[in-house]
Image 1 (cartoon, protein in one colour):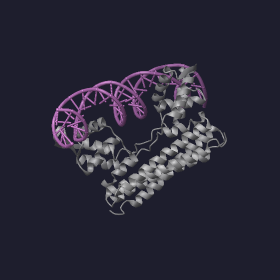
Image 2 (image 1 turned 135 degrees about the vertical axis):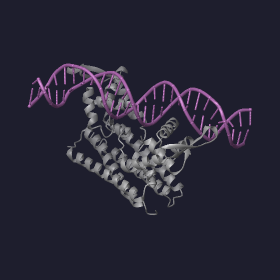
Image 3 (image 1 turned 90 degrees about the horizontal axis):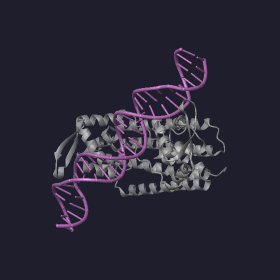
Length: 173
Length: 173
DNA sequence: CAACTCATGTAACCAGTTACATGATTCA
DNA sequence: TGAATCATGTAACTGGTTACATGAGTTG
């Protein structure tokens, strides 16, 4: 049910069309909560049927501009302050680790080295984003910076872990 | 498609029934790749229809014991060495951060403090698991230890990040 | 013999992905 | 005027969750 809240969150600061929102999902939200076109349009329909959004303008090419309602703001707030975020579980990267013993030690090490490299790449990409943004004291900057920092720290720990893990493999094999 | 490979991986070391596998999913694999009963039974049926598993014994109460086939081992190996693990994206914990500016600074800080606490709890739980296991030099110990270490480092970085993030909120509000 | 565990299966539903389909407007 | 972009929608499918249904064997 998080797509609903992602949409409510985006619409809490400004009204937008499905098309506008879709572009936000492709850019800033892509790393946190990706969504496809069919999903966004479908969910916008449900949200207005449920009274959490209104169509407040119609433009050329059938464009519909959605605005959040008071009920929508209540729902967003409720989700933010009262609903426990569910911890992320599934990780195929980690699932594979459980079965690395079916490979030769050097193959297992190669797998872990590849993971270290992928994490390093992610980290470098995020550092490039970080330096490319003109950070200021706006709420968007503050919270955007916080989210980015999470990505930086996570990719760093993934890299360190994978490098350490490679040293553990084959120690006793 | 990872459930298939999780099942193949578990069956690569020993044959088991759906019921046996289910318990493994509830215990050791629960934090990495949870699966439900209906999912496991359904996938076992598909895997044997596809020739990756065989029913090698039938026991009381309709129990079926599944064994991995040569094709199954090939598929497992292929997945481990050739298929790129997809990076985890979706995180409602992080999605919420983008919308914390709709709350008062003290509410946003409370949210982040709660995340720090949750991560600390997870970390403590994993440390308890770590000390409760008799680690040795077996492959299971090696890779189990590596997976556990990931959880320890991840929960630590989550805690540190959330605590730091709370100090950033309201600095300029 | 009652309660518990072992053991499998199916149906309905929800979230998400991919692909198909259509058409209006803008701009070089 | 042709290509690109804007803009919405639907259908089929996949993976996962919850709930329902059934029954055999084990143990106190």
